[in-house]
Structure formats: C-alpha cells, structure tokens
Image (cartoon, rainbow, N blue to C red; front, side, top):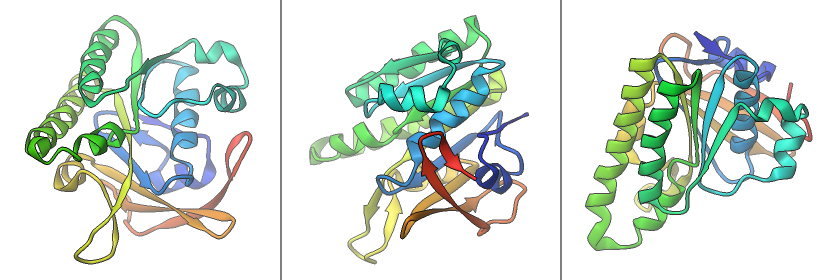
Length: 218
C-alpha cells in the first residue's frame, strides 16, 4: 500500500507515495521542507486512517492549520511531544499500543535525530546513545512489517570533518534500515528533492518544488 503526500513532485519520485511495511527517510538542511512534507503525508493518511506523530522540535499550530485546512482531519492525528531522547523511545512504545487499538497506518518521527544529536555532546555516553538509536529504528521497522504500516522519519545533516561533505546523521544504521530515502536541498528560491534510495525506483531522480502556505507545490 502507498500513502501519497499530495505533491506531484514527491509522489512521482516515490512511485505514488511512501510504502507500508518499510521506513522512509527524508533528510536535508533546516528550511528545506521536511516538516511540511510530514504534515502533508499526515493529512492524506488521516483521511482514511489514524496517524501517530512524534514531534521532537515543536510543531507550529499555525502551520498545522495551513496544511490541514479541515481541522476535523487533524483529530485523526495523535501527537506525542517529546523533549529528551529517552522520552522518544518511550513515545515509540506508546505508539505501538495505539497502533494495536486504533486504525493507525502511519507513524511519523520529526525529527528522529534532533534529540539524539544533543546526547552526542556527552562523549562518555556516545556508544550507548548510538546503540539506542539503532534499537529505536529496529523497533520501528518491526512495527512497520508486523502491522503493515508506513514509518516516516526526518533526519538532520552534519558536516564530515574528513571529507567536508554534508551527510545525514545516524550513520549506517539509518542508511541500512531506511528502505527509501529522499534528500531535500535549497536551490536559490526553489527546493530540490532527490531520490537517493528506493526498492523499485531509479535512484538519482529529482524534481524541484516551492514551499507555499498550502504545503509543497507542485
């Protein structure tokens, strides 16, 4: 099953939308449209199903109103506000209970790595935190496969000191466990989405879009 975003650009890249049974990763620098895309996927899924939305960065109530327009649809979105990386793990387990009780077809974690990143500042805890990140992602993949739901995560970027290149956080764990990945970039006044990993679509395909009050166009 595919869940569309409503954006012609993004849905075309994905072959119709994000897949159930897998994890889809959207990564890019700040301001490239990651949260807007999450809200668009949540809106479309909420027309027929329930959505679990784990928010680690603070959703804008005004942005939610702009994207959803019909306030009644947002009542199908269960929002978990978390403030620590430990709370994020707890929220995932609470979301599992919700998935079994309600007709949930989409779990969103925006951003999956924001709180993880702050934990990395403590060098003594880095190994433990990295293991917890992998455990959380493995847990999400298990849920996706067992309950046939879609998992959508957003990821932040960092600059690799050795190469000088910007890369997504989380290393090989996120790269391996995410079956679909899209990179979002700023191109002057436009944004570009590039498919960097997919199970059946050609990688490297891209399209350009603009962010508006209504979401992402086209």
